[in-house]
Image 1 (cartoon, rainbow, N blue to C red):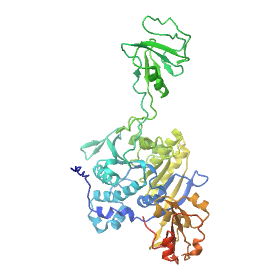
Image 2: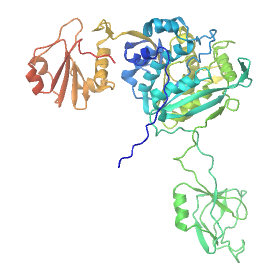
Image 3: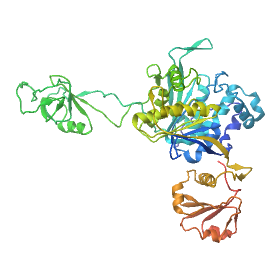
Image 4: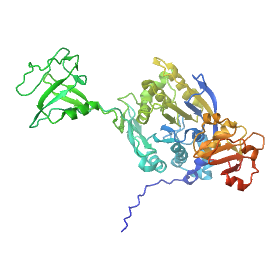
Length: 547
């Protein structure tokens, strides 16, 4: 007899314009990044990036190098409150967004509500963010009541409802603000999703976990020998007699010359009493790092377990008033950095964002952190501070589409690195980029692109992995792209020249492989020969794929 499990239905959200954006991330043109500045970086090669440009195109530009590699994503998108007085337009009605919606959704966009527009704007960006997120990574998204319910549903669809970790409530203000003159708004939310379900979020090391007594009343008396050097005591400094303590034994009757000096037992001592622990259990606990604590003059003995493999889960409530992470704190920080009263509206406190970065990257000192709605650059500030605290080498990638990307976003990071007011600099560096030209232009490879960029693009479209430039360089073959899953890839491409795959070209290939994929403008080799030698010819530009 067959038993069928009931089908699980996950609610999905439909809105006007959804069909036009479901797979729009695939149609976004791939652009390269053009380096404009290397800050505090002698080599000019920093792993930290600040990118000025449309974050949809910037996220696409990051895929060849970063797909599946970003450990932590934090974004603070527009809340869609209908307020048009922000530096970052919060009505999803800015000229850039309106132009984009007109191109992607078409005339239908004229009938969209602001909620439809917001969802159309967010959906393809979240799709690309999901591709960038690593298998052990997490994404944190700040939001308020205006779009919280809608955001939850589209994130369930994109990241998977089973990967929803929870919703963190942030107490954001010391003083409330009125919402529609009916409610005082004191909190916002952060939705958290992981790429897979077996990811834990760090919330700090446990306090000295509940101490447990060694001595417990039983019917049998035993002797425990406590080795020296593993015992802490709250006894006062000095010399105290240690001996056997049990029935008929006084504290003045010493069995040896073991002493307690400066809170450390320097040799060993024995306790005779009714207890349940065996000597083997005690020694096993000590071997695992358990500490022995003597609390009183009566030698009440307890143990404290400290398990380095365990940690607190991240709390679902953050009281900004208790940790210097309120909106007011963020305002004061920016004022101190830029030495003027008003810089940016509604910036998040860097202490607040640090909690999310630390939650997923506490044990990964080389993690990559991405913020594609960078605003005033708070996420980079949080990464730099965290690195300074624990000696980490975490990298940040910021994307900002507005014109203040250099004057506010990047400038804040410069000042945090160098130090501001009485705050010591964190050190660090970054590269500043603008979005470059499209890779595919009118169906052809754009010859404005460097050959190196074209090679990286082709290899990524074939393998879904970044090209290994060092390995390619070591091969000493001008047109070799790399090996992937027993296949060798070659791009026989020269600007303003026609290339032909022939026997002369094949004679230059010295590295054996099970299969070959070779790009060229033409091929004169017989099809039977190609088949027999496991060679796949791909014609430029016909077979150059978009992704």
